[in-house]
Length: 181
Length: 181
Image 1 (cartoon, rainbow over the protein chains, first blue to last red):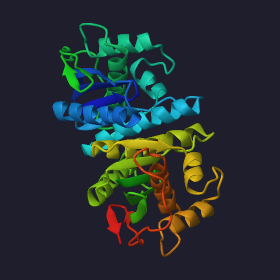
Image 2: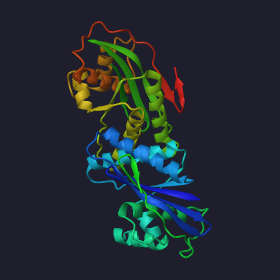
Image 3: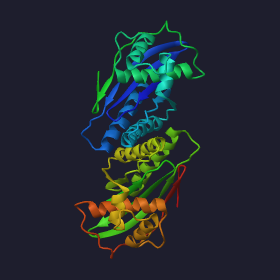
Image 4: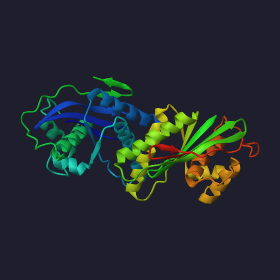
């Protein structure tokens, strides 16, 4: 099972891909889609749509996971987040990928063991679980954490053994239409 | 100029297409994408994505208009609406259509002359302006009203003369993957 995790946002949409082989977790790639802020909303959403599709085509996941966005007390912010999330979800569905959803609380609980863990704890735990050589960025860490959460949660996957994972390789970044190595 | 108006919603997404020739408005088609409610969110959004793209391919609009959704006091509802809106906007942007946005208040003001007009007044005014043989459904009326609003508002379009419009023809309906005549 290869899991693509997405952390949707209208400024930055994080993504992370892991491979699950039996009880082993291996890091494949991760990064962030940086969405230009000086463009009309429809073009910003299209950046998310196009680039999530591009990540799917490049990494060939078998399943996808979307972090449930925080329902903000500001309705306008919630609406904007909803639209970004809609675009990411459309891209996944457009690639015929099944989409699983977890809240930030579920993800933190699965990865750190504490639903109210700080961002830094998630980053450190993702680095540890995937044997990354460096600390992943916040965007990457959140997306990878949602993928790890699915590996923990999904009935087909056994308990994750922390040892025996493959080493991390490259980090993929996408900015305004181009993949940056 | 051929304008496609969209009134996004997670249960029903209304659409309406009008042709503007000089000062004339002609009805092309309208209807509603009926989204199945018993499916996962990603598949529901894909229904909107696919069917809005289908409407664009079938009607070849030159510009599109999206009604700004009502920011509900319930954040969960706002998030769901945002996702439906994101899916509709992605479909339009995916077809390389420019997307204009108007609030319900602007649309009602442009069509009825009163930003707080009732739904029925909008339906009647749309019927009158487009010389429709019958009263359009609420979904169709809202989408057509947003297209009319753009025809009124856009600088390239002159003032709309109510006389001299072409007669309405068919109403298109899409339900769960099929276009209903």
